[in-house]
Image (cartoon, rainbow, N blue to C red):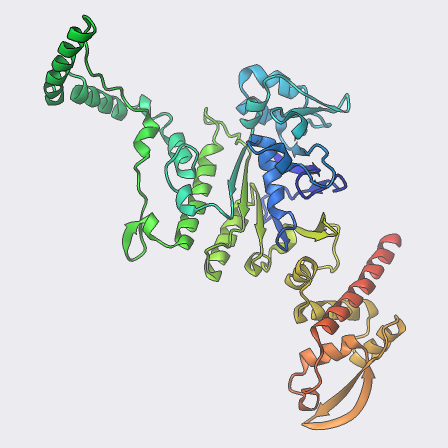
Length: 490
């Protein structure tokens, strides 16, 4: 069971006009379950993760913080899950809610179930009735719904040392809790328990002999002041997870020290590694069945504190995980958007204009180039950053469309498409300058990129604005060609 679609309305910076988002679902191929969110700061990347967290876990924040401030309407988050839904319900729902959930499974293969949460009734998860075309509010469904899937979030502002501590809600604390859940039934724990009570509670123990004097004095004073009563100390056995609170992770990277003495990059790397282990343990069926509980991993800016090589290694690990699990991450790092496997990844460009958020999907059925998405394309669309790499890609694609392999012939084709020849280029042969030739801005920039050895032209440069203009004009021509091909059924 995976997250197929998400709808968001009036949630923080997103208004009611945001189209439904379709996410990548793992199919066994490297990177197939990875969804990457790219864009400038304050464009809503982390907000999307917060919305998923809101749907599953609710929030303790005031609703005014969640609602879109432009219209004040109720914030709504909807998620469509798709896959072997019935098996997940059978395997992980509490028994008295199985029938309730199954009433809301729909689709020819019973592959869909849809959940919603809104700020009008913030404590309730609602289920979509496909037959009635409305959401229904089933009593007592909020907690059981959480048990159907796990969602773990690593936020950009999280202290990685906190995540590898052993508190009740941390990665390490939950991991050890899962591992130890059956430990209390083992012979090892039985021996420990007997030894604990022998040491602390047996009348024959040395500790009890010391305490007996304290008990007798306390009891004597109590009887004089308050009346007859027996007073004694009893030591209750600690819960198993209490023993983990003082656990320390040691790391030997040439110098063996506790983790909190290592740098932030090392701490974050260990936290992410532990999260992967935790995911494997958490998704196991309690009866050892083959069915796995759906697990979703959300990482906000995974590049934080990691040097480039470590970022590449982390990406390799995430790509491997995404063969079978969905991973969602936000990033500004070029190392996460320059992989050879990017064509399999779900890539979402977040933008903000006139105080409105929008999201553009790159790749899939929305390809500018046959080999989209590329590093240069992402940088231009997400950050308005023109690069020579993207210029080369666009120029090459138009040469392919025009079937003009020679620069002179291709430049004439560009002129016929409405691109004026506003620049001059002087070709150089063996260091000797030739005649000046009128060329388009696109060809001038292409020649400057490909012929840095041309000393005659070295003093004539193109500006960043001209590079951006040239790229934008070529994008327009390619998009028009793509639209014509769609209309012609090609």
